[in-house]
Length: 292
Length: 292
Image (cartoon, rainbow over all chains, first blue to last red; front, side, top):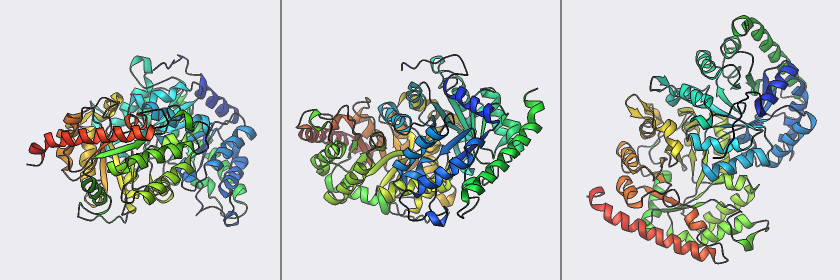
């Protein structure tokens, strides 16, 4: 690989993410999982219903968030790739500076990884993407050839089955800690990492394990944290464990489906304001021990 | 989950795969990885070049194979989802009975896994799909709600980085063996499996590890084996390790790009005949110890 890794932790994707986090004083990421079965009735049957729904959510919440996270499966199942392209283009045009994390959990090697990276970065113009780490180093390195983009590796996921493999103890530590360790070591030093361009996905349902991950990777690496709300994660415990410097708190369903009426976007904005406010309170409570 | 698992190892996907394997006396799977940079010059610039290229390969080799394996990244990077739909529909129509394994390496949970399954099984009408096991049981179970379809979990992949996680020893055995073990235990007995509907991906570059996997899962579970040819896997050692009853030997580039001329389909057929013949020889040499 010819990947060049810079020493600065403030270059590329992380830098842009930190800017928008500070600018808006927000750690909130809105996940865009458009499920036609849960979308407002008045959109049903329209050919661009998914785009229209997501655009309204985006426009109603963009000033409150540090990122948007469209989940590609919801688009692919509906043959809505063009609507996903249009949605991401809309975010970049109407809300410049807000990063788009494409949740795709891809994972493949060599020439195939390059094709997946072209899909995410060239076709969809995502700023970052989620990846599965199971295939190791040569499934990660090709993504780092796009120097201005970021990747988030699955580390400790929020679902019960996440423990099946991730909690297995090998060489004295659970597998998810090994992923965190490899992500924190640069490619040219035998790891998987690229400072400023790699982050991890850690579920809010396991705050103690988030704390372990944060200890391993330091305060600067972005952690994308789903599992608050619908999945039962505790916000205060999560922020206490993850810190407030580079933690992205994702919420999808609680915001998208706050109302199924025609005012769904107003309800989504209210839900986003409430959650951002709860996050700020949690950051306030957590600040002394995290940022002394 | 309400998944019903049958006790028979001959139901659903495996049964159909075995039928076509016996019918054609072939373990060969042709992987469809259409890279415009490597496709014949005379197709360049045509709006349906990917479909045209793949259809010609399919029609030239269908009587020689036990399955086709389109790799979705090559279609997605080119905005060619409709060409992938048309290609799979063509395989089902023109070559009924030949299973299509959609190589997508998906991995997500709950409602999102359902969307991915709809993409693969309802939209594309794939007979089986490849999945990453990193997120565990609840990323696998939703796929088994489609009783006639199959899944192949990544187990021991053929790339060098595959060892980063898959070879870590936890509770006395490497991670990939744990995946094999979980796949061989049915869902309702605490595992991930569904006899006749689950298989594993094991790379031909590690015959000794294929042998370990085969010992764990028994002779009936389908193993999808990439890595012969371009990646340097040894065919005889692979067949000796994997057996001949339910082993699928995948070849992509050596067949697709056997010629870059207008006769690429003729060259692909010749390459497929040669490889099927080598596989048969390897099966012949291996048969005494495997099927005594």
